[in-house]
Length: 320
Image 1: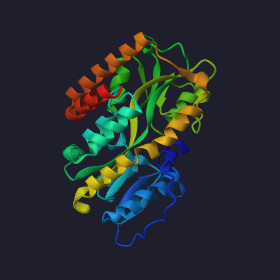
Image 2 (image 1 turned 90 degrees about the vertical axis):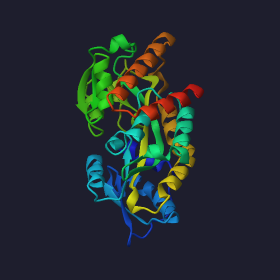
Image 3 (image 1 turned 180 degrees about the vertical axis):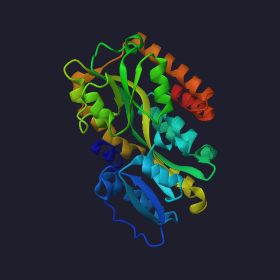
């Protein structure tokens, strides 16, 4: 799981920890626990939060589901979770990861910058839950064990490792006629590498640390066409924090975009070039149309937030 820990470590944190006495508690998911890179990385946010009037005690979790449950049950006042895990707290923020809605990092930066503005604050609040920051964690690509399987029609019948807590991913897999192989963040790589599934999806930061090249083998490839944008999100229970904390935090987080993105772009550059597979123009149009259809259906089913999806589509049209 070093690939996940590295995502937060991209901020290159070297600041000391803030004393925990009298503080609020922040759940921090890190497979390595308190010794992991993500937990150490969270200290930069901890230090910044002190300047905004909140002293945070960082609490390490090696299970993201447990961290989310403790946040939901009031054992933590804040949490750092992946966007897909955050869906139970904010449908609007989860919708940032809508299938195919953000095609590039330029569009992602513009999208997160827009959502960080005060005019969009209402979208980031759901009851007492508030999304206090969103960070880029990399475009999600298809990893396939047969590089000839690129067209949508070729995906039908293939076994795809699918996060079992992500309704949009399961819907898309079933929509294209493929088979869902239930997985989670800790198991999808081994399932792909041992041949239990034909296809997996992940950002480039997973390629080396999770040895996904083993599953790719000699005939596989990584389809260079973003399925979605993985994000890391800071969630807070608004009533526990000073007035205006969430907005200040979102503004700060948006300004950190480029520094956090650096690790992802480096990871993409470090992938063995032989594995990148370009999608032919004709097939690209089919993917775009399919993603649009999936988004529309998921909005109608209440999985995605209609306002956010419409906003992101408008932004993406300006930043292809």
